Figure 1 (cartoon, rainbow, N blue to C red):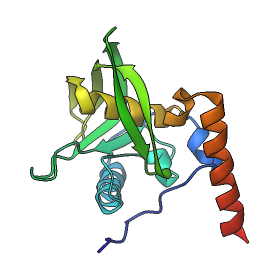
Figure 2: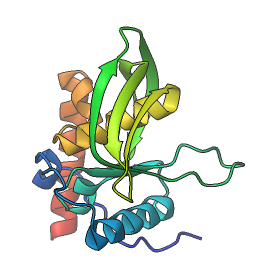
Figure 3: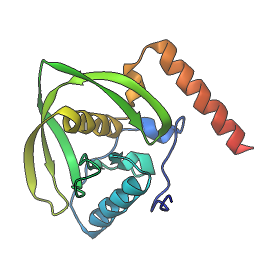
Length: 174
């Protein structure tokens, strides 16, 4: 049974997904509520990451949880995240996106990154991530910069995906 999501997830070709998000000035109750809503929406979708722009909020915030199904939930909130270092070594993961439902493709990204961010309490953190966590951080940070994982694909594949979703959006709009 699918839980109802707290917020609606925006699907391509919506132009909001191509906008650059604004930095968050202070971590107040509104931002904490937004992060909670986003986590609830992400888990209900279900997904492992969600950027604020994917629910139409143009703020530099994303949430993720890369824990395995048999592990307990390990939600992470990234406010104003910045990658301060990325490895020369690359890795390839099959990526998907809640804004591009049921489409998956292999994407090559740096295998490890260091990221600085604020958590939900406004506390500063810096972590080094590799594997799925590094990929997920980069994928969600791209959203905050108006970039999608399909931008890493060939023009032919990207055009095919955009055409499919544009056609679906027109059908839904009727």
